[in-house]
Length: 127
Image (cartoon, rainbow, N blue to C red; front, side, top):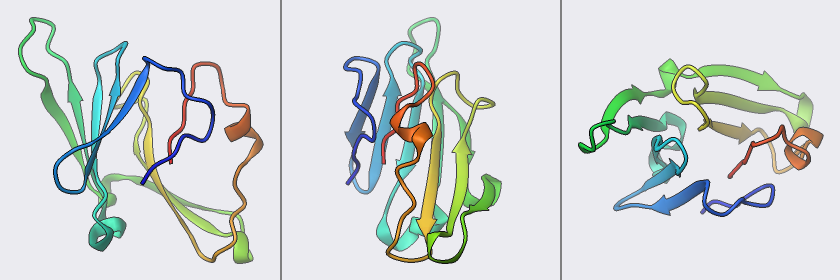
């Protein structure tokens, strides 16, 4: 299950459930697609695919398959507020789509953060 953190801007980002445990995120302005496998048994080994549209109208092509070992990892916070974060899709992959995984060490969460409630212009975040 996912939810928008800040109000969605209809028509820019589409989040759709696909067959199995895949979620598809589409940037309708660039045509970029990020597919994410979110099976509970593989949550810690998330697989993400980045697809680019073809300028000639052919079907989109997968240009990146990103595994957890390829993601940028770092820790934020401390104690019960600690969370491990992996960035899978960044500016090097897509013009506008970003995709990551956050795992909290406890039931406590330090979210939302100010940057989530007042994101940079044009930014939209889905959890």
